[in-house]
Length: 187
Image (cartoon, rainbow, N blue to C red):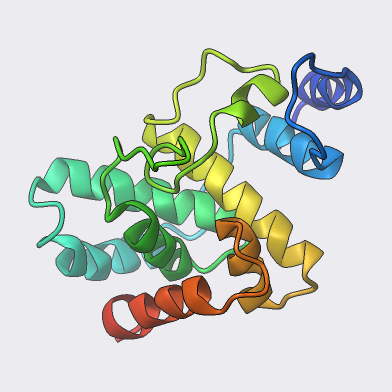
């Protein structure tokens, strides 16, 4: 649960303009990201989490051979997906399409990490020293952004995924996510 101090800090950050900020930033998303990074979150049903973890670990073994690294990523993905009220398999599909599970991936546009987060967000929420290659930070921000777009699109996952990718109006990116879900994560 968020502390009053964290909420106050997030509200202050949301109200403080950032010099040199990219144009047309959504203040709601800025606030959600600030609050998300202040939340400590926890898993409620440990048995369900362990069953999921075992199943997904087998599916991901070919991409991340190191068991410790694989389990760390899966635990974080599960936790962050549940915190954002997203299916954890959807988060894995986004990671697969965005970075192919390379936590050090950098896109041609400069997006970083597993879920390909743009670095300007760290400055926007007053956390310029955070590291987008850090699994927890990247997944927390990526899941928060995806949840925000899903809310903005009133539950329309295709439109939310297109927004996440910056391709609203095109079904190409959402179809890649759906293919990953169908062929790897929802077997």
